[in-house]
Image (cartoon, helix red, strand yellow):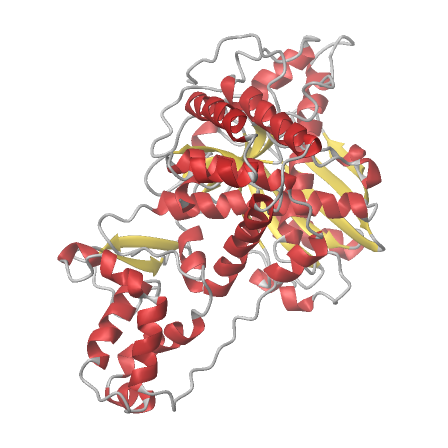
Length: 544
């Protein structure tokens, strides 16, 4: 089910833009020193309730052979940073020196987010050429484009000397988990539009065009994501619980609603919007996920099911119950559509996402207490065949070359105490076996004195106190598929257009259809997700 998740009304991109609209943020481009090749420097700023946030970007071009989605790259066509204040004087000089170096750079607390990316190899030049000739893009040529620039990282929270999350004052607009990264991504996306139109104007004649209103919001920001997401979800159980709980609370509320004409009309509009979005996509091989054309078929089944559920006393509950008997992609698409009917206070949602992850293990707890917790919180371990040799095929490590998480075969490389401790299922399973050798009244500190290797498992058992804290999978199993957990996280962020490139990484799109910087303030709408492709009369095609 996590591997079928879709963005919702409470995904981080949506809540960020609603906050910008509610609080009247004003965003604009303040400097654009870019030549005709797209090389140079640009600065954008947001006045966010009295706090000035600036995005500074340094742009160039690199050979196509140097393009990579992996974090091990050392050259990019765009490097940028979100900072607080104006990037001028010595501050600007420091940013020019350090931002292009990315992980090798060193910063101070004025720097909030560090990012980088490249132009779309397939689409950037095509879009420039089309506009340079005074034309708009051919929908058949960009059926699955979705983006102009593709990012590969958004570093924040104290990395490389940047400001930590704890460093924001309580009234700061970025004092919400991931808010800084999504402000940065929104402005990164704006840069893509400006680069294409600027290069088209430089390359073309006086007839060069800008994107017309139909295309001016369609493209989002691409992103490539790999194994680095997986350890985060396993290492932050209370964060995971908060993310899932927000979705489940909203769903439960909507399922309890009676049908009204207004609610019916709203849901019908979202179903139609989803269908228009997916039906003109491509039929690429997106396994293990559905491609756009297959999702469009699922939307048609949802539309038919909703017609049958309208007369039920609780029609939205009936639709959800129908979806539970379908495949996971259909179920989660219904969840996404139903949550559009929910109208919670965004401040409440923000508060739910901020969690306390500190939890001390009481050394006086008894073996009996621990067994009871294992039984109530981790009974699902029995379903994972954890005694089989395939249960520990992989182990996870921080790469010496990239300082990023990787997984490797246990029979090919010895962990030698270098493993990233996300083998939660295995550790808890082995703790249970160890506890069987002790009397129920034995305090846990004695067990850990005898066998200190089980301390992490005991602490995790104590920390995992929510309904949704665990992914309920074994990340070390030969059958473990990272894409499933990655998709849930990306959907929570607000990403879509899931295109797996292996079992370990995928490409996605963020902010497709979203308001541009010039649409900021209280005029910004929230019904921007799932944009219909402009000029959508052409038949869907398989992308090359």
